[in-house]
Image (cartoon, rainbow, N blue to C red; front, side):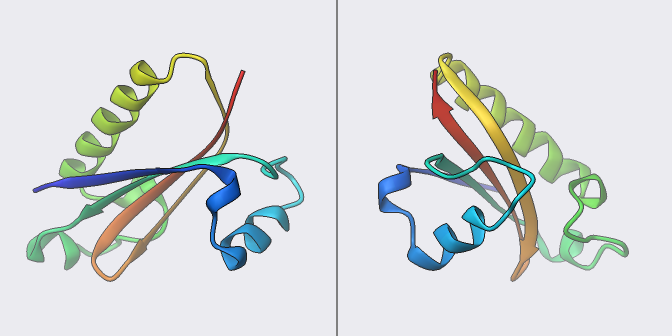
Amino acid sequence: MTVTTSDTPHTRLDPDFKQQRDSVTTLDLAGCNVMYIHKRMNEFEAKTPGVSHQMEMWPETVLVDMRREIDAWTKRNPTAVVKGFTCGVSDGACNVALHWRPR
């Protein structure tokens, strides 16, 4: 199973996403860049009872790939400071967004 990632500068975020992100009042995410990880579940994982937007409920194979991608991104960006972490499930895929800024 493949994992796709993308890294988006804060100046290039979709206006709707930016508004939603900026309205989260408990986190200071305004001006953050966003790194996305997108991992599609296979047909059996997607039917697993309890799979939800909570990352703890994701299939173990998905969690292993997500951890590997986050660790690799952290090694590639040692000066990045992660300010927020959002995750969810949509259309049979698990998605993570790291909201970060350079130091």
